[in-house]
Amino acid sequence: MLATLRDVLVHARENQYAVPAFDVVEDVMTRTVLETVEDLKAPVIIMLLEADLETGGGNGWAYQLGLLKAVADHHKVPIAVHLDHATNLDVIRKAVDAGFTGVMIDGSKLPFEENVAFTKAAVDMAAPNGVSVEAELGHVGGMDLQETECADSVLTEADEVARFVEQTGVDALAVSIGTAHGTYRSEPTLNIERLDQLNEASPVPLVLHGGSGTPDDQIQTAVRHGICKLNIYTDERVAMYKGMKEAATAYDRPDPLPTDMFGPMRRELSATVAEKTKLLFADGKAW
Image 1 (cartoon, rainbow, N blue to C red):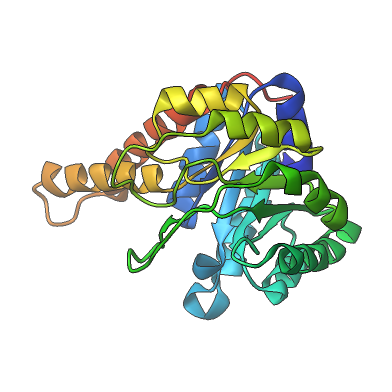
Image 2 (cartoon, rainbow, N blue to C red):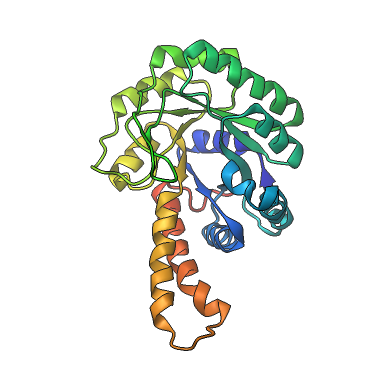
C-alpha cells in the first residue's frame, strides 16, 4: 500500500528501527525488492533517481513510476515512493505532479541560508499536495554514480539542525556523520557522538545516506542512536553483478529462458534486501 515518507519514518522513530530505502531501476529490481520486504512484513522506501527517470526521452517517469503506482496496492506493507537526490526545483514539481509520496531536495553543497531557501521552495511545492520532503544538512561525499568525481564529506552541525527544520518545514533530515556514497576505499568510522547531538536537536526523523558497505555493527549502532532511514544502492548493484556473472556462465544454450537469465540476479538481490532489512530491525514492523 502506498504511504508517505513522513508516515513510515515517524513510525520508525517511534518504534526504534530504520526503514530500508532502496534505489531501483526497471521491473526486475522493483519486483524483487517488493516481494522480499512483503515476505519480511517490513515497510520500505522505493527510490528513483532523476537520471533513471529521464531515460528514453523521459519515458522512465511512465515506466518506472507507473509500475510502482500500479503494484503498490497489491502489497500489504507500507511503500513510500521517493524521488532521490533532486537538485532542481523543476524536477521536484514534476515529481509532485506525477504522484511521488516523498521527494529529496539536495541543497547540501549550498551555504546554510541558501540551502534553507532552496529547501523551503521545495516544501512549498510538495506539502500542499501531501508529499513529504527530505533535505540534507552537512554533506555526504564520496564517488558519483559514474565514478568520475569524488566529493569530500562535511559533518552536520548540531546547532544548525533545529533552525534548519523550523525554517524549511521538512519532514526528514539527511545528516553527515562519516558515511560516503559509492564504494568505500577504506572502512568508515561513524561519529555516533555527533549523531546523538543531531538526534537530540532534530524534531524530525534522521536519514543516513551512503549505507552500502558500512560495517553492520556501525549501522545498527546508528539506528539505535536515531537513524530512521538508510539509503542503499551500491550493495544492490554488487549483488546483481554477482548474479549476472553466475547467469552468464551457468547455461550453455544460446537462448536461455528469461527466468534463467534473471533468476540468479533476483536471488542475489533478494538476499541483500533481506539482509539489510533485518539489519535495520525493520522486519515484522509493517502496520
